[in-house]
Image (cartoon, rainbow over all chains, first blue to last red; front, side):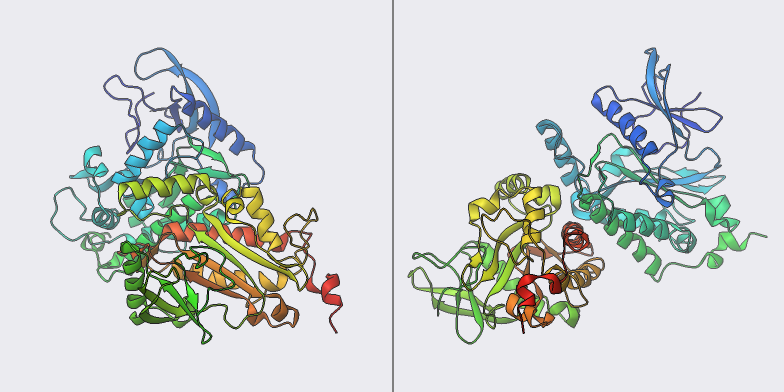
Amino acid sequence: MKAPPHQVAGHQARDGKLGPLIDAAGHFYKPLQGDERGLKEAAFYTAFSSNKSIPDHIRKFFPIFHGTQLLEASDGSGMHPHLVLQDLVSSRLSPSIMDIKVGSRTWPLQAPEDYIDKCLRKDRESTSLSLGFRISGLQVYGSKESGFWKPDKKMIKRFSAVDVRLVLRKFVSSNASADSGLDPDCCFASIVYGGSDGILAQLLELKAWFEEQTIYHFYSCSVLLIYDEELVLEGRSCGVEVKLIDFAHAVEGNGVIDHNFLGGLCSLIKFLSEVLEAPKCCTIKACPQVEEEP
Amino acid sequence: MKAPPHQVAGHQARDGKLGPLIDAAGHFYKPLQGDERGLKEAAFYTAFSSNKSIPDHIRKFFPIFHGTQLLEASDGSGMHPHLVLQDLVSSRLSPSIMDIKVGSRTWPLQAPEDYIDKCLRKDRESTSLSLGFRISGLQVYGSKESGFWKPDKKMIKRFSAVDVRLVLRKFVSSNASADSGLDPDCCFASIVYGGSDGILAQLLELKAWFEEQTIYHFYSCSVLLIYDEELVLEGRSCGVEVKLIDFAHAVEGNGVIDHNFLGGLCSLIKFLSEVLEAPKCCTIKACPQVEEEP
């Protein structure tokens, strides 16, 4: 049991704090949050797992759920209930990951007033209200020497629309780094965002489902974009994945589509399309780094 | 000059109040609202009219703009500036009309704090937040004897999700009336909502544009659904129209899609699709009223 090395957002099991743990068998143990949120997320996973109306091509976007388990908490406070989930990056060496909270509103209608106030303030201060989504965390693999570019939380919280546009380009660039003045080369854009198995294709699949499904509304839920530069360089586009995580605020849809999530998703799709369309996007072959490959 | 006979929402030029006027030549004179809203709406129409990037198949959804004009105000207060717009129902005898404010959020980010508070409260109290749209007004033609069913404003303000579902069915029924306990027969659903020229087809055209356009964000803007039972009975589906109105809170999109309007539009599309899919929808031929036609 150890803290996940590639966690980009959320509470972390470091410095004696409560956070998720992983094992070597590909499980991700997420401690149930103390208030009712933890129970709600467990209830969501339980109901979702057995819901036969979720098509397989949609189920693949959700982490596999293995139930709940009492475990020694990472903060040394003793036994604590954990969700046992699929570790989404267990098989990856150097995953580039972005956590994007989707929807301009992160609070369900039924939430308590003080919680709504807090969320609404965060939604207004971040890009949630303006763009329909906000980046909650990310890491971008650079090279064996430079390792990951992983901007700190405070910096991410201050991301403006302009920053978001830049970061979505950096995420698929071979020259992303903290203080690089270089324009992102968008080397991996066509293979990571584009293509028939790429992130855009997967998001469009999700979008089609959200235009129809009225079972769930996902507030404060994140889309996780994952790829592994090593795999992409080998031309294995299967390394590109979209996953949905964080369901503490998933509520019943009551026959109405999740227009809030859908709107944000459409906005994200438009942003990613624009990275692909931008003339600065080179093809993977035009990248110096890739030309060095045998 | 007279008050429009078929206005279903907004301020009305009755009882010495300030409201819109129409003339016999098909013009609709909308008084500029006293605060900056009036000027903003005039600025929107001016900019929109000359914006060459609006495709014709989208422009048709907007009222034609003929500039502004100083006119004797309907409240007798003297000369007042008015927008001169196309009267959308001038050629119609007995139009059934529904005004639907689209978007779960009716306020732009830049709005003053007290205005945001007021709008947010209304959005939460109405179906805007839950459904992504709210009905602001409607009239449904019944017959020469019964005239129109036109629920009063107070009743409309209290519409729940269940009411909205019912009203969207009544809107295309031959037996819609205030206190009818009958299930709406949805006689006109297939021709008004369905078909290649119907409301759904038109809303889908709009939706495709909203997935791409980043020029404008439309807060507190309404979709107007219009049809004329007489024309529909004659099989003239051209009588079915979708129009966008109310642009006092249209703001620049700054390169971001209007995810708020788009989400609400998708929700409305889903609601209307469900009226079409519902087994109780009869075809127009199965309606007793239509069978009487020669």
